Amino acid sequence: MGRYTTVQSYSDSNSNLRAVPYDQARGAAAGAGAAAGTSAGAEAQAQAASSVPREVGGGGGGGGASSVSVDKVHNPYGSTAGAGSGEFHIYRHARAREMARLKGLDEEEARAQADAEYAEKIEGWKNEEERKTEKRRKKRKREKEARERRKNLKLGGIM
Image (cartoon, rainbow, N blue to C red; front, side, top):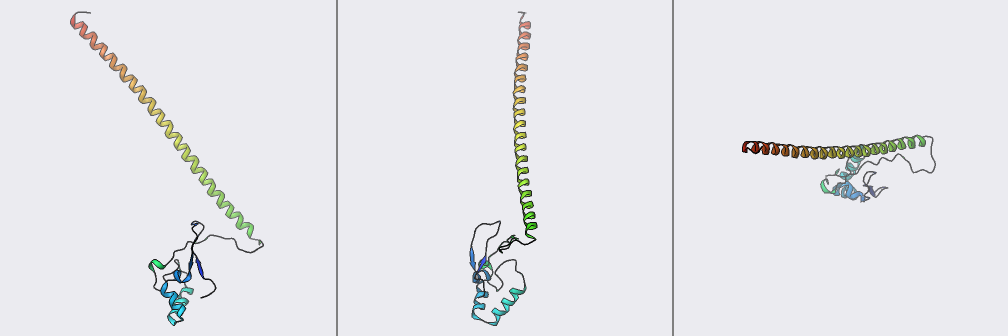
C-alpha cells in the first residue's frame, strides 16, 4: 500500500476537512489492480508516479464519481522545529500579501460606504426637488383658477 493511507482533500480556501482512502482517490480499478499485484496495476502505478495529476483518481479507468478533486494547499511553511535563514523572507512576503488583501477589503468597504452615502444624498435631492415641483404646480394651478374666476366675473359684469 505504501507509506500514506489517505489523501488530503481540503485546502486553505476550503475548510471542510475530509480524509479519503487512497483506494477511493485512485479509483476502484487502480486500487484493486495494485492490491492484487498484477502487472497492469504496476504499470498504472508507474504511469501515475511519472505524471503529475491535476485530479486525484481516475487514472485506472475508475473516473466519474470515485475520483476526488483536491485544491492546491499554498502553505510555504515547513514542519521543522527551527527557522532557517529564509523563513523571515517567507513570513515577510506572506504578511505583505495578507496586508494587501486587508487593505483591498478596507478600500472596497470604504468605496461601498461612499457609494451608499452618495446614493442617499441623491435620493434626498430627488425628494426635495419633487416636493418643490409639487409646490410650484399647486401655485400655478391656484393662479390659473384665480385668472379663470376673474375672467368669468368680468364676463358676467360683476367686476
